[in-house]
Image (cartoon, rainbow, N blue to C red):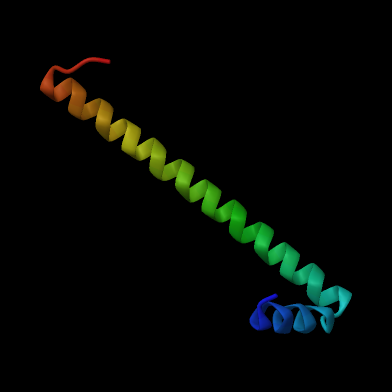
Length: 60
């Protein structure tokens, strides 16, 4: 196994339950923020594409 991964695992073992809960909440919050950002960006891209299709007379 990778030495770096083993060192990470040993470091994680030293975290308290409270620290692990904080990290879990941080990861969940970041995940939700990224998901919302991607969804919002995709909606904007779809709107722009629809506008370009209308402007160029293309249909789908």
